[in-house]
Amino acid sequence: MAAGFSLDDSRTAPQNVDTIQAPVIAQETLPAGTYTVPRGYKVSGAISTSRPVVIAGEITGGSLTANSVVVCRGGFLGAPSAVNSIVVEGEVGAPLSAREGIDVRPGGVVRGPVETPALRVAAGGVIASAQVAVGS
Image (tube, rainbow, N blue to C red; front, side, top):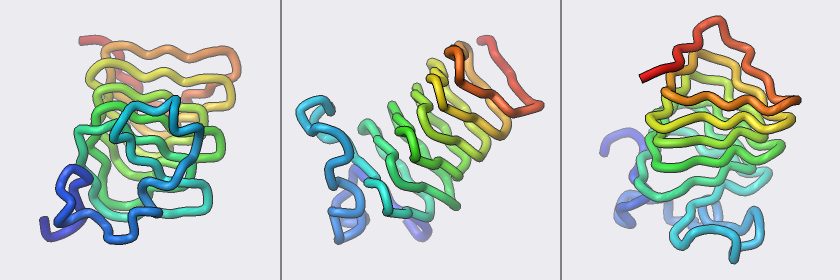
């Protein structure tokens, strides 16, 4: 891949694995193979993976294509994203397309166009977008 990297291909993934795999939450609660972006780290560029992604730091620029994503409280996703499902406890500030659903938890904020068949917004969660497409 010319720009970005695939987290499933160790030949093109970043060599400093701490920027992707450092613990964010207790490792025993994460599925095997989960990629994490720890607090204080910023990742920029196109990212593609079939594995779960946990964002406690920041992903900006490029794009994110992933299976399941969790944006932790204090985490920021600022890249256009196409995912199966996403849980937002932090902030998403870019277009978001989720094939299965979006779950915005208390304190979670989604800014930017949203497209998904299922949108759940808990009390204290915010969808701050004029473009929300929910349905099949």
